[in-house]
Image 1: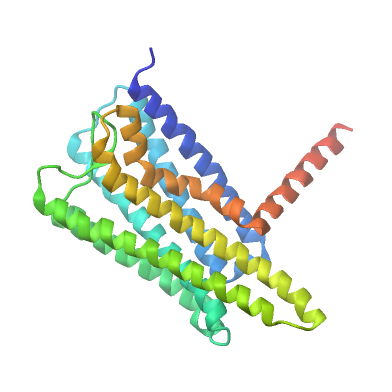
Image 2: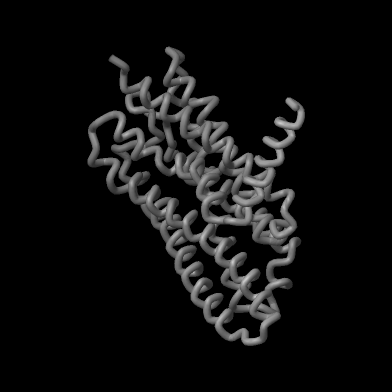
Length: 297
């Protein structure tokens, strides 16, 4: 009978391989689309990079350790935990900035280009990186609330018997990130409402045609950002609230690792929710298939 550790390992490899492939596709495709050269595209490409890094981290560290008998010293695993949390925090903040981007695009039309210029967008990205590194290094290293990889369940977890760490992670991790994702979804809903309202205000024929194209793009962007925020909120709730109630090793691993798995799955979420990216991928696939058939003929 296959052991729980082996099943968890194959789950890790399968999800993270899928995530690595889809997020690389998102990144490469976004780089080639003119519409993704905007500030929204810049943030999306950096989100894809975060997702790729998380996938690589789990594929080269967690998966192989589960499959083999290799045992790293317990203290060393905390550095991987800190790095994974830095990646996650950056991704969460970038998701919020994408939602803020869409909000400003429909509520501050005439100021949008100034607020979200490429320079300002890269500045916000750097702020997200700085805040995430400073926060995680301070909380998880300097204050001693280490995020270890549990050798029995193969999940990243904080010391259970440390009340100080429990309080710290509750407010600085769970509450902070839940505030981000809730704000993200609220901004997306407000942006969707405003975009729909603006579309109804257009009356001339040419304007209607242009509005439909722009509206579809806005809907794609808003839908993408909304589902990314929704996936992060679900992962946070599962990790913090439902995981302590589960005893089965496989279910616990899935539940407690969902925060990392969701970053991997985001590649698929972006492709499915952003029709422009999906159409570009399908077009490229069709061109590749046609060129293969042409070579065979």
